[in-house]
Length: 172
Image: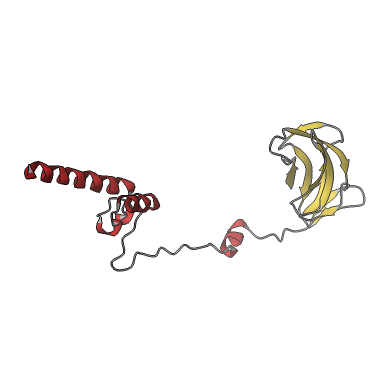
């Protein structure tokens, strides 16, 4: 059994009120079905369900409920109502979590090392080096995997300014 919760139908929505149910207990629903009309401070909004199964229990109409409150109980797809109103569930044929996880394609990210003669340079370091007229690929990097950082560019600037200051004093 799964819970169908009051969705946040707006960034500032804190509560809502179900003013109409479009399904009844025992109805089969699938993800994307409009199952209720919820009234918020901005108006009445159709609400979709994102569960598959059979509606079991519904909250009463016209109750002010917070976002995240349970609106309905949804039984698995194989749930059926017997004639006496007694619920029964057929043997489960749902996959286990481990099976589902094995079927999910995990995206991989290829890490492409810099080519020969290419140095990694952070975007901020590249911009600062360009404004100073420095070539960042000539600097030694202290960042991850030897990347040239903004601090490396600033250190090179300080080093050059210090060197030129010494040369100017020697020339006097």
